[in-house]
Image (cartoon, rainbow over all chains, first blue to last red; front, side, top):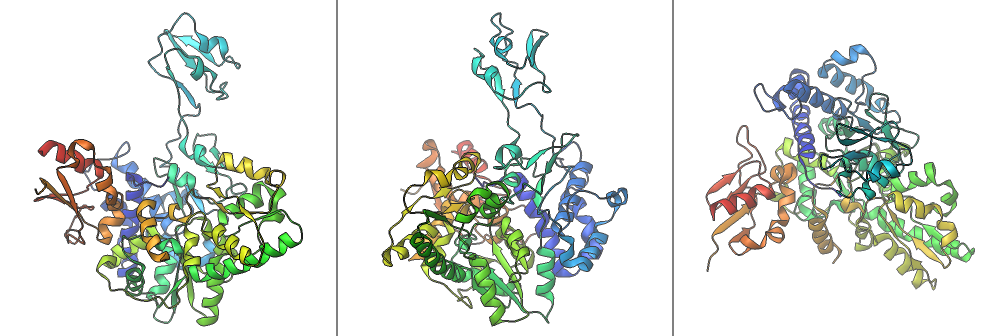
Length: 479
Length: 82
């Protein structure tokens, strides 16, 4: 669940400051001041002291410039942000290696390893069922209290269940708990590391970390540079989940984007219309060839889940391209040489965009909102404007779970092909297990729509609005 | 009868992105004890974000301007001043 919290607000405050410097062309002079301005002398520190807070802000700026958080050498530790900014200009696309999500070591609290903790509600009772029942002999008594040896504990949870005083509690490591594919774990110093071989870029760890220690490597620097370049045509390709992101109608967002500097604004829902049509044709054809089911392919994190973790169902995943790619293709034909920026709620789209020749950069709504603030553009005050390419309500419906399935099943039915919908609403440990056996459990012709974010893209990691609000606006757009 | 507290939540982009979004559901989340005394009125930008060192999001409760506002801060304030 994406909810507003301090860590998210601080991240956005840093984004606003950085965006402002890029727009004002004062980045070389002022970028190294950001950590100090965020945590001025004598201000209250969130961590141990203001210097720690500043170190974390420095890393955040580095990540927002597009770099990984970790230092590669000792000299990186003292490198000025303005030098990173200069590198960012030079390197351009090349600075992106495999990682999309990056852990800021200084921010990672290195949460305790053991997932079960004895609280001081322990009465040191005679029965001691925790010790008696622990299969790993991980509990001992010291000073009248039970103590769990974290090196022996395997987190089975038996002690928690048997304690008559409920003195043992489950204490999750939020990022590890949130990751559906066990891609994040501790290194020898207790800090979290993301395994690029396993990561599906869903962004759930980033939302879950209460220290805001995980960030996505931003592309806003590159986007803003192109926007400021008068010789470049920049096209904003806006995902259907834009509905209500700024508590206004889409028309106002269109003119806000133009005010901010985009030359053209295109609805990705237009590409979703194409996806819906092609995916239906593919589905009908597959069923005619006696295949039992097909899954959607528009959610890039799900595509990675299958590729990296469940190759056994790979052949059931639709080969139809995603709305972003069809939109990018259309834009490329319409305005050759333009910079094509996908704006959406998604982390995984960054990876999908990198693999494609039709999209240059990806930005989240949260980044977009921060840029609006930096540019002094108030969306609410803007006039309504039509986008340069609009879409039907079918494509717009892709933003919520059920939208893709409804579109495909309805149009398959009009071709005389009957199928049921078996949606997977949200990727987590449980649904990953379900997906593993999908080819054995589905008995009747079915379309399986998979959304990594529960509820669909409206609940993505990069949204600014609560899904409740966004849904109201989307429903208005679907009429 | 007019209600005792008139709450306007700034929904300008600055406030909205920097924490105000969550308060848009305030009306539906008011606890029963204060629900009848509060009227949430829509507001576009309260124009406070342009001041130096502004601390968005802003909420106006009658004449009191709250900075760095949050749902719980608003509810606590109303409980204290009823």
